[in-house]
Length: 545
Image 1: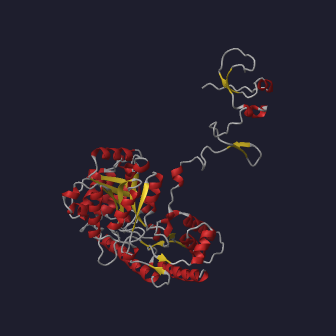
Image 2: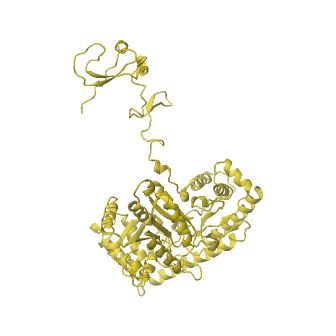
Image 3: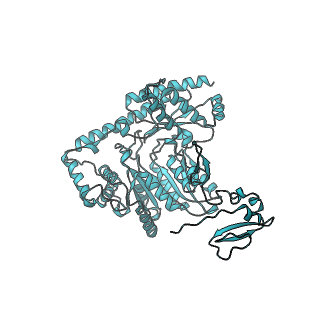
């Protein structure tokens, strides 16, 4: 590659330029050196840049570094000039700056700092940081059959390995996932849904449920201005949805769950949100989280039927986030999959309504979050779009193969007569029973505190209680540029070591405040946590009243 020769322009040459005229000298000009020209350069004369050349030192510096496509220079600490960054906060992708994810936001970052300070021996009003901000079951020592070493467990391992390239989980799989695992997922869905058929070709193994959800949103989002895709999400919602929509520049359409009726979903509210959204965007999808996160409600079959009819009538693509399907605790509640209900409503719906449903290894009784295993099943998707889905997933080659293997163990657990079965059933029952008891305990204790109201935790892994914040505290939060419930949760963290997530990170009705806390800590630690929350709220209320 040839180098470009740069020749300095002399003051004499610059003086030869007539007033009011400026020159831009380009290499490789050719032609004789005449008058004010520069040997080996072409000159372009402009009438309006004379001020740029009023002195020799400013010959080409008047154009900003940005306009010239060069990084800005700046003085370093040792007095030398250094180039500025090519990528800065001002020129980075603007949609990324709109992304927010409260579950690992400022509260959690401060909790990590406090843990470090404690480890360094710094004095705090608490002995440890209790992270109740995220549903990480393994971090709370919840372990089930996935660690077994019995003969049937080894047989499962061999079957999975034999399905891997080179009999190794270190090899890539097919982009859609290991064939035998997708077959096991399909059989699991058929058992769960009472025999409703499931085709392995409609199963995609994903990097947790989140990967499948974001992938589907990528397929759905298109258009500009009033035709830009709108996606309906519940408020409160899991921040994955708002973050993904922000990154994709899609329109977020909020529909509010009814807190007064245990966070139930009302079709009238769906219709209100849809009608208002159609004035400025093109609503194309409806997202449902069942059981709910962060709200812990379990939808009735009647409600699911109403949602399916609504989606059919309004031509909306349904996305059913069902990662907590085994986490149902409240008496009278039962998990109903959207697919099962859809097919039981008959061909008018089962052959027309487009549905994607999601599951994961991260929740339920397994809680294998770190392996990032999951799947999605697609129903009634256009064949050409399905090809595009497969292409899109192939860009990342495949989801993590160990996560695929864990997904297989979730959908194909020990069966009656196998050596691991009794131990598996015992541990599974014990884990879910303990979660149910902690759900009841959380509701009971929080509802004894004046200024805190907690709905029954019917399912999932969280409570989302409403808190009363005194006006004085609200004004103090405004002075600090914080949401009132962020101010509340940060104060709690600093005084008690308890890490919760403010409700503003999930969305809430104007003028209401909440926090989300997981029910996963061991019972003895959960009791301490709840008592500390109770005492903090009483102190906080007294301080700001």
